[in-house]
Image (cartoon, rainbow over the protein chains, first blue to last red):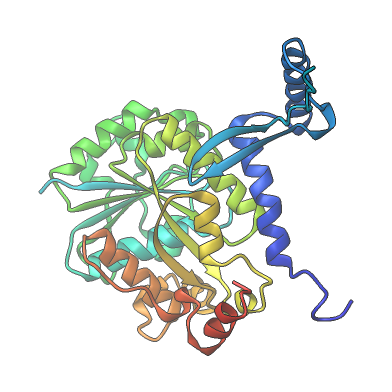
Length: 80
Length: 265
């Protein structure tokens, strides 16, 4: 790989740590997060029509604060 | 005198806790303050050899706690700095010989005697670590710019927050400015962004640290050493002085400017 195309290792280190720390701090594994997402989709679908494939659930951090961020696009409803 | 009790910890082993304690305690003593450092690593003592005091040990911390000697008998005076003392760990006992309340009692006895107590925590997050942080007024977390060390440091910071010990300060040890410049090592900014705590100093990788520990003379006594300068600066910050960060810590210079312009930082 050429000098300019190679992703330098510090960038990988930081990206990998960002993920690991979020899961360490919340004690939530990626698998548990996936299962939380599926439960959420099920619960919301009882009330409103959503596109399950478009749902995004992420743990975000700001300093030492963590938050669970969900982006749930609604399916367009054509009212008659 | 009412001593400030400072605990140095890290989570991961081998990142430079003992080196940091030896250097910070020596540098504070060089500034004319009375300092006692305590080796909290029962069973695996090392602070004595780093300070070059291994031949002077008669009593240790467990002897004090179990009442076999007076506190002052276990305080070994440094060879060069009369205001610097070491209370060594016991080598033939285990960490359960000391409890957190023993440490609090010991530190309270020292508070009236000295200006600073610096405690060297063992690696890990178990009993020895709990002992080491029990009496702390302030905690310094040492890490290296490596994924495993940063991850473990983050665990320790989380535990300290849960224990309501306040937010610790970070010592980033063994940073290699050339690797950072080539983007092959996490920078101080990266580590701070990941850990989200206050930075008290960055210590560059420096072969003089090993030379110093070979001799039992901490690197702060070497006026030309970059690592020595970094530790002397941290010691001054601990004493409440506002000391500017060294140039290597800012990623400054022409290269830094180019990186900022091209958006690589």
